Image 1 (cartoon, rainbow, N blue to C red):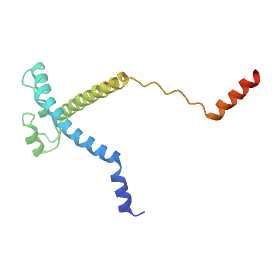
Image 2 (image 1 turned 90 degrees about the vertical axis):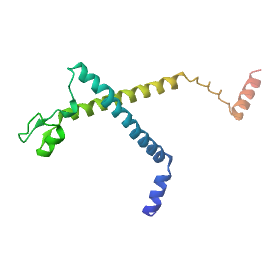
Image 3 (image 1 turned 180 degrees about the vertical axis):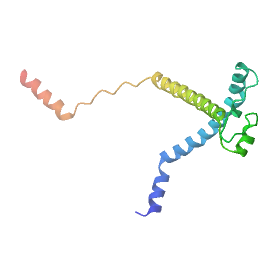
Image 4 (image 1 turned 180 degrees about the horizontal axis):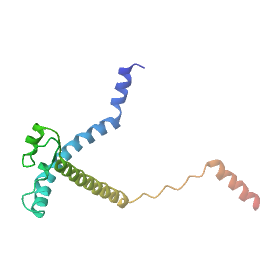
Length: 140
């Protein structure tokens, strides 16, 4: 089978389409979570922890830059460890993981609540029925 034919077979499977849809929805969901963290959670945290905190500009300079510079300016002057950005992204991940956990949990509850159809009684093969009738008639 040629590589083109194998690729066509691979792409035409339903799982690939499902995966593509999942990636697209995940990217859109990521934007929502980034907005939630950046626009709602982080401002609340900075307010609670002392008013003017901005985690995204917290860094450790590696080339002797002043810590009073904004992160973008400090990066232009040399290497920095941007731990504030890491905190923001980590919070982003935790919130997204929690929301996905809650969604999976909800779907699992909905699955459990669906009424299960009673299994159909097993049909006895005809030859077994005939053998039982013969046995019963011999007992008489």
